[in-house]
Length: 255
Image 1: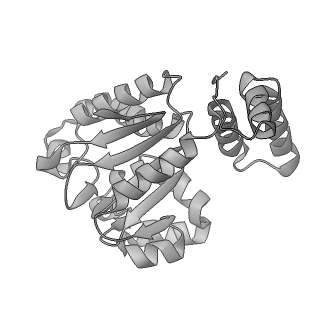
Image 2: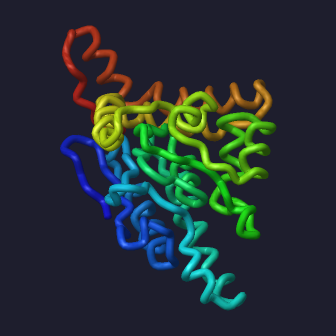
Image 3: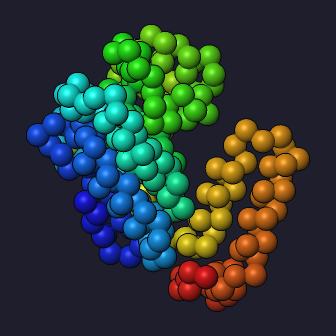
């Protein structure tokens, strides 16, 4: 489900409350389609990923459904799962996860796929997949090391342990911890501040950040230069400089 919040902010809502937002095949399909639609929308500058469940952001894959699938059905399900997690990761605008309660397995991987994670004090995060005989398959083995380093990611994935909000912030598993029940409000406020900036600049900056991950510095600087060239001659750059000199808020053309 997608909600619009005035201006240029969209909220992508996980809304399968009876299952604590466990990701079923159908939920994965819907999430992938919603991400594809958002990615194609030019008037959105920031997205918040949130949950309607009071006690959970998302508890991961729907293991009850998984238990009923044949091997062939599991193979057919995989593209929907990849489209869901990959769709969040590939959104071209900045994304903020609003996390409370349980964000485990695929649930935490959805949060990891966002650029920033705001968690309230009730949050519990972790990648427990090896405890049920699988591995993090929604990006966890690749995204968690980029957040916290290879050794710490290995410890968390191999031990399958759950981490509460305060320690999660200390370890870098989340970016900010806020009062219980305020994660969505704070995430939307942050998204609003982000969305006030140049749409062209935001997308180019995100692309440079994401594409430059893991590259040697010389190659990464070329990525940054290409992103700079994409914005330097844009209408947003012209408007931004004019607004600064005229001491007014910019009216971004978004191109």
